[in-house]
Image (cartoon, rainbow, N blue to C red; front, top):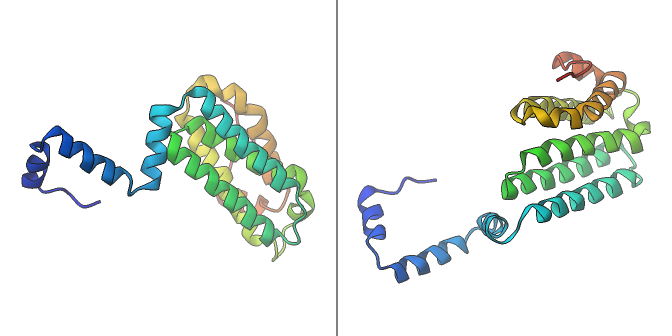
Length: 184
Protein backbone atom coordinates (compact mmCIF):
# COMPACT_ATOMS: atom_id res chain seq x y z
CA UNK A 1 0.00 0.00 0.00
CA UNK A 2 1.48 3.36 -0.99
CA UNK A 3 2.44 5.81 1.75
CA UNK A 4 0.27 8.89 1.95
CA UNK A 5 2.30 12.13 1.71
CA UNK A 6 2.17 14.24 4.90
CA UNK A 7 0.74 17.29 3.09
CA UNK A 8 -2.12 15.23 1.64
CA UNK A 9 -2.79 13.61 5.01
CA UNK A 10 -3.06 17.05 6.65
CA UNK A 11 -5.32 18.31 3.86
CA UNK A 12 -7.66 15.31 4.18
CA UNK A 13 -7.80 15.65 7.96
CA UNK A 14 -8.71 19.32 7.61
CA UNK A 15 -11.69 18.55 5.36
CA UNK A 16 -15.14 19.19 6.82
CA UNK A 17 -16.62 16.15 8.57
CA UNK A 18 -19.33 15.72 5.92
CA UNK A 19 -16.73 15.55 3.12
CA UNK A 20 -14.54 13.13 5.08
CA UNK A 21 -17.53 10.85 5.65
CA UNK A 22 -18.36 10.81 1.92
CA UNK A 23 -14.74 10.06 1.06
CA UNK A 24 -14.54 7.32 3.68
CA UNK A 25 -17.72 5.59 2.45
CA UNK A 26 -16.49 5.81 -1.15
CA UNK A 27 -13.13 4.25 -0.24
CA UNK A 28 -14.68 1.50 1.87
CA UNK A 29 -16.93 0.57 -1.04
CA UNK A 30 -13.91 -0.20 -3.21
CA UNK A 31 -12.76 -3.14 -1.08
CA UNK A 32 -15.00 -6.19 -0.66
CA UNK A 33 -12.74 -7.54 2.08
CA UNK A 34 -12.90 -4.26 4.01
CA UNK A 35 -16.69 -4.24 3.70
CA UNK A 36 -16.86 -7.77 5.11
CA UNK A 37 -14.42 -6.94 7.92
CA UNK A 38 -16.38 -3.83 8.94
CA UNK A 39 -19.68 -5.69 8.72
CA UNK A 40 -18.34 -8.36 11.05
CA UNK A 41 -16.76 -5.89 13.50
CA UNK A 42 -19.70 -3.49 13.64
CA UNK A 43 -22.81 -5.58 13.05
CA UNK A 44 -22.06 -9.13 14.18
CA UNK A 45 -21.12 -10.82 17.44
CA UNK A 46 -19.73 -14.07 18.90
CA UNK A 47 -22.80 -16.10 17.89
CA UNK A 48 -22.26 -15.10 14.25
CA UNK A 49 -18.67 -16.31 14.49
CA UNK A 50 -19.87 -19.74 15.59
CA UNK A 51 -22.36 -19.83 12.72
CA UNK A 52 -19.62 -18.95 10.21
CA UNK A 53 -17.37 -21.71 11.60
CA UNK A 54 -20.22 -24.22 11.45
CA UNK A 55 -20.95 -23.36 7.80
CA UNK A 56 -17.32 -24.05 6.90
CA UNK A 57 -17.33 -27.28 8.97
CA UNK A 58 -20.45 -28.45 7.10
CA UNK A 59 -18.80 -27.73 3.75
CA UNK A 60 -15.68 -29.62 4.80
CA UNK A 61 -17.70 -32.63 5.91
CA UNK A 62 -19.85 -32.65 2.77
CA UNK A 63 -16.89 -32.34 0.39
CA UNK A 64 -14.72 -34.81 2.30
CA UNK A 65 -17.46 -37.43 1.89
CA UNK A 66 -17.80 -36.86 -1.86
CA UNK A 67 -16.34 -39.30 -4.34
CA UNK A 68 -12.97 -38.14 -5.63
CA UNK A 69 -11.54 -39.79 -8.75
CA UNK A 70 -7.93 -39.03 -7.91
CA UNK A 71 -5.81 -37.54 -5.13
CA UNK A 72 -5.26 -34.53 -7.41
CA UNK A 73 -8.97 -33.71 -7.54
CA UNK A 74 -9.20 -34.24 -3.81
CA UNK A 75 -6.31 -31.84 -3.23
CA UNK A 76 -8.06 -29.19 -5.33
CA UNK A 77 -11.10 -29.47 -3.07
CA UNK A 78 -8.92 -29.32 0.04
CA UNK A 79 -7.19 -26.19 -1.24
CA UNK A 80 -10.51 -24.53 -2.05
CA UNK A 81 -11.77 -25.30 1.46
CA UNK A 82 -8.53 -24.00 2.95
CA UNK A 83 -9.06 -20.80 0.96
CA UNK A 84 -12.46 -20.42 2.64
CA UNK A 85 -10.79 -20.84 6.03
CA UNK A 86 -8.17 -18.22 5.13
CA UNK A 87 -10.86 -15.79 3.97
CA UNK A 88 -12.80 -16.41 7.19
CA UNK A 89 -9.69 -15.51 9.22
CA UNK A 90 -9.05 -12.36 7.17
CA UNK A 91 -12.60 -11.18 7.81
CA UNK A 92 -12.97 -12.22 11.46
CA UNK A 93 -9.38 -12.47 12.76
CA UNK A 94 -10.50 -15.81 14.27
CA UNK A 95 -7.18 -17.49 15.16
CA UNK A 96 -8.88 -20.24 17.15
CA UNK A 97 -11.15 -21.01 14.20
CA UNK A 98 -8.17 -21.11 11.85
CA UNK A 99 -6.57 -23.92 13.86
CA UNK A 100 -9.84 -25.71 14.56
CA UNK A 101 -11.06 -25.65 10.95
CA UNK A 102 -7.72 -26.56 9.37
CA UNK A 103 -7.39 -29.46 11.78
CA UNK A 104 -10.95 -30.54 11.00
CA UNK A 105 -10.24 -30.30 7.27
CA UNK A 106 -7.23 -32.60 7.40
CA UNK A 107 -8.78 -35.11 9.79
CA UNK A 108 -12.02 -35.26 7.78
CA UNK A 109 -10.20 -36.14 4.59
CA UNK A 110 -8.16 -38.80 6.37
CA UNK A 111 -11.34 -40.24 7.83
CA UNK A 112 -13.41 -40.15 4.63
CA UNK A 113 -10.81 -40.53 1.85
CA UNK A 114 -8.22 -42.88 3.32
CA UNK A 115 -8.07 -44.96 0.12
CA UNK A 116 -6.44 -42.00 -1.66
CA UNK A 117 -4.13 -41.22 1.25
CA UNK A 118 -3.10 -44.67 2.39
CA UNK A 119 -0.02 -45.23 0.23
CA UNK A 120 2.61 -42.92 -1.16
CA UNK A 121 2.94 -42.94 -4.96
CA UNK A 122 3.54 -40.52 -7.79
CA UNK A 123 -0.18 -39.71 -7.78
CA UNK A 124 -0.20 -38.89 -4.06
CA UNK A 125 3.06 -36.93 -3.97
CA UNK A 126 1.48 -33.47 -4.22
CA UNK A 127 -1.26 -34.13 -1.69
CA UNK A 128 1.22 -35.78 0.68
CA UNK A 129 3.37 -32.64 0.65
CA UNK A 130 0.30 -30.42 0.98
CA UNK A 131 -0.96 -32.32 4.04
CA UNK A 132 2.48 -32.33 5.66
CA UNK A 133 2.82 -28.56 5.19
CA UNK A 134 -0.69 -27.90 6.50
CA UNK A 135 0.13 -30.03 9.53
CA UNK A 136 3.30 -28.03 10.09
CA UNK A 137 1.21 -24.86 9.75
CA UNK A 138 -1.16 -26.01 12.51
CA UNK A 139 1.71 -26.94 14.80
CA UNK A 140 3.20 -23.47 14.29
CA UNK A 141 -0.14 -21.73 14.96
CA UNK A 142 -0.98 -23.62 18.16
CA UNK A 143 1.59 -21.87 20.40
CA UNK A 144 0.05 -18.53 19.41
CA UNK A 145 -3.25 -19.51 21.02
CA UNK A 146 -3.95 -19.25 24.72
CA UNK A 147 -2.75 -22.42 26.52
CA UNK A 148 -6.25 -23.04 27.90
CA UNK A 149 -7.30 -24.09 24.38
CA UNK A 150 -4.65 -26.79 24.11
CA UNK A 151 -6.74 -29.42 25.87
CA UNK A 152 -9.44 -28.97 23.21
CA UNK A 153 -6.99 -29.74 20.40
CA UNK A 154 -4.79 -32.45 21.91
CA UNK A 155 -6.82 -35.49 20.77
CA UNK A 156 -7.40 -34.20 17.22
CA UNK A 157 -3.80 -33.05 16.77
CA UNK A 158 -2.45 -36.42 17.85
CA UNK A 159 -4.93 -38.21 15.58
CA UNK A 160 -3.69 -36.07 12.67
CA UNK A 161 -0.03 -36.66 13.56
CA UNK A 162 -0.63 -40.41 13.69
CA UNK A 163 -2.23 -40.31 10.22
CA UNK A 164 0.48 -38.08 8.80
CA UNK A 165 3.20 -40.45 10.02
CA UNK A 166 1.41 -43.69 9.04
CA UNK A 167 0.12 -42.84 5.57
CA UNK A 168 1.27 -41.11 2.38
CA UNK A 169 2.57 -37.86 3.97
CA UNK A 170 5.04 -39.76 6.18
CA UNK A 171 8.03 -39.08 3.89
CA UNK A 172 7.41 -35.32 4.00
CA UNK A 173 6.57 -35.41 7.71
CA UNK A 174 10.04 -36.81 8.34
CA UNK A 175 11.62 -34.22 6.05
CA UNK A 176 9.80 -31.38 7.80
CA UNK A 177 10.64 -32.94 11.20
CA UNK A 178 7.02 -32.99 12.28
CA UNK A 179 6.61 -34.44 15.75
CA UNK A 180 4.96 -37.85 16.10
CA UNK A 181 2.83 -36.69 19.00
CA UNK A 182 1.91 -33.39 20.58
CA UNK A 183 1.69 -32.57 24.26
CA UNK A 184 0.96 -29.18 25.71
